[in-house]
Length: 103
Image (cartoon, rainbow, N blue to C red):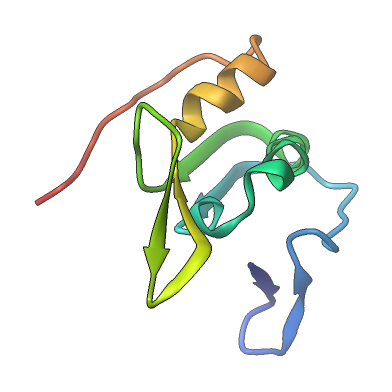
């Protein structure tokens, strides 16, 4: 995951990104699925800290955590209930919407 300013070079990875500002929307799309499960708590913490209103996680879903082969590589694609894990980590979050789009 990398952060960009408009039409410029990358600002760095999600792990390196620091901000004193909280944003109305902190989101990830297709990023959490490629992170090793042991790294997820730090990413959840970062999403929570960066948001002052909404968090959107647009990721593959599986009710049971599973690892899949990705382009011939192992340990590169993970499916799980990311939203549930984030919600369990931060019980003060309120669920606004939860849906699946598959077609």
